[in-house]
Image (cartoon, rainbow, N blue to C red; front, side, top):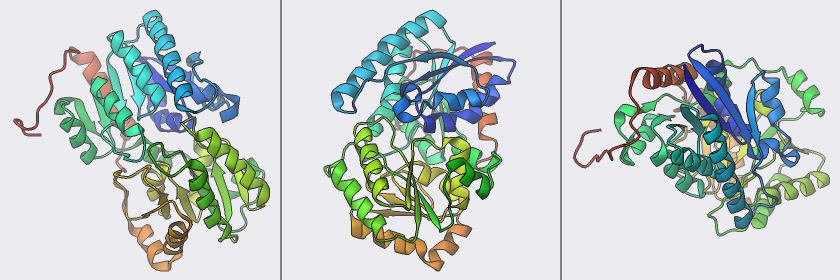
Length: 390
């Protein structure tokens, strides 16, 4: 039996991990240990660990690390807390492997602690690029500490190999978020409205705006431009989910609350959860903002995504995605494209590059094969593609 610890710090992270977690929980060869931390445990961000418990997932430990504030110092202190507390957790629980996803700063600190304890790391969604955020450096750093890699596209698999990882340990499996979108039984529109406690009578737009950590334009300027564009389109209802606990995330959420009080067609929600979020996507007119979900999951619903600014710059996406600058005029032009009959027809026909069959099942099968049948050697050799064929 393999003892696998799975890390989750945010609602979005859990949503992507949940198909794998559920399969592992029901596998007799795996002793699953779900470890919850970060924004999950904060009332400010909705105490979203309760969504995990509602899914009948047993939580091994809740580890508090989050500092007040979202400036550089507070984030560094949060990372320091994670390094110390997870170092103690790994020393105490001694899992055979740690499964992590993506590119969050908490995840980087936890992976350092796992590396210090000589615990093999399994990484999902490596090789991706987000040139407008510090996540880019974090993600590639986690890749170099990881032993097994599960990428969402073939392009990203090649990039992980380009970082020196052996092709035999890098697997292109697709995105679990897309698997969720295709397989989870979604709510009716009436049930969704009842759950949200507001009507979605007019065409509605789902929006999420996260901080762009490497952008010269201030958060206040970006959000002001975003709101100015929305104000020019009062015919829509806007369902806006709050930002994560990133640098500047609290300021964005503060501005969202101020704006929502001024406009009756704007509803700000701390957390929709996986099922409500995907249900909201099913019936929406378009998606706006700078979340990776707009590029990864939304194309499978065949609705337009307006991807604002550089946060997701460099990430592969379908032709259902319209890239634009973070100013009012650019956003409004993008909305006009998304409203056009020609573009909406294209969305109906466009394939999602992240969509593959049996993503979670394949991940679990490969983990078991690699962990049970092979010897793990953490002394990795750098795979140099200059001299070897990928």
